[in-house]
Amino acid sequence: MSAWTWIAAGSFAAWVWLLLGHGSFWRAGVRLPARGAEGTADAWPYVAVVVPARDEAAVLPDSLGSLLAQDYPGRAAVFLVDDGSTDGTGRIARELAAGAGGLPLTVSSPGEPEPGWTGKLWAVRHGIALARAQGPAPEYLLLTDADIAHAPDSLRELVRAARAADLDLVSQMARLRVATLWERLIVPAFVYFFAQLYPFRWVNRPGTRTAAAAGGCVLLRNDAAARAGVPESIRQAVIDDVALARAVKRGGGRIWLGLADRVDSVRPYPGLGELWRMVSRSAYTQLRHHPLLLAGTVAGLTLVYLVPPVVLLCGALDGNTPAAVTAGAAWAVMSGTYLPMLRYYGQPWWLAPLLPFVAALYLLMTVDSAVQHYRGRGAAWKGRTYARPEPPGPPERQVRPDRQEQHEPPLRGERAGAGAAREAHPAASGTADEGPTP
Image (cartoon, rainbow, N blue to C red; front, side, top):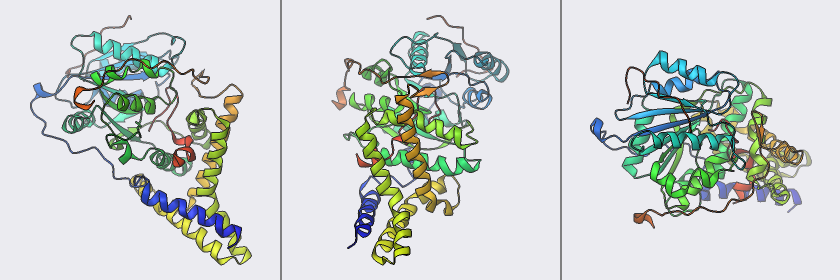
């Protein structure tokens, strides 16, 4: 066989393994687990909703408004932590609560983060502390981003799923916006690559090492957070959602991750530039800022995604039928695995064969992430840039026996009451501080 045929065969073998042996990552059917009976209002646990926000005035009417309007039978309260905003985020939040009613809202600001903390996790720490200080401690914490809108029954369904399956962490990947051409090309692939990095079925299986969450929507049991020592134990994490899931799972907690039907991102990414920055700011962090891992990632992306169309074209031009056929088969399998995600996002099937082009963009985004890191501009978001973190000492953790500041008073409305494949796609590994998270 020719060299082209061997290369194409390697790509095809990789796709057969990804199709059959990688946790069915390509299936888009992982939704909230079966929920139990609702019960009476007294049976519902107290949930504190913590929303870190930095310059989010433009999206708050959709996102915060949806949280205040939650149809939750038990006690719930919203804590919005204004992380040094300059666009009136805190003022807009108070006006929304005063005008719309709904769940009680506390707006607070912790000031600039202390050394060793990312801004988002500093805000989350402050919000959790406020929730625990106001009366009885909540049983659950809903950690959700300021650009995430929830359907009226979102909180109710999250709590039902967590209690029915005895889960310590339930996370849903918010459905990102797909309105512009670039959003349609890039966004479904972003979620597809994330699922390839962290196959949901492996994440959700107790006893496995695979752990991940989507920071836009994380329901976390309060005592599980205390056992894992979060957010203190992950205070330097730029990809904080994955770090959170790992900490909870290491502490003996049961976690679940899947796609959302009731949770949507309202942040627009109208052009390639905005999407590029969203992806590239944390891609090199996933590679632990290591040049050899970057080289392996480039090689892996090239073999898996770029070889099939290139060898198919070269084989056809050179009359190398075995190479062309093998490369075409690899491209066909690749496209087939992408179809479920395109259907989830309501996109046409003909975008599937364009996945190699999108993967090439992600490869360039990953390389750009490394370049920006070495220029001192890595992991930059909303005026903050984070250097490579020093590994913190692990906090003491308790494993479940059965599993071995100043702030303003609440604003109340009318009622009270988020491997190889791992190296291949660092660009979809998560998001940086205060960034939009799926």
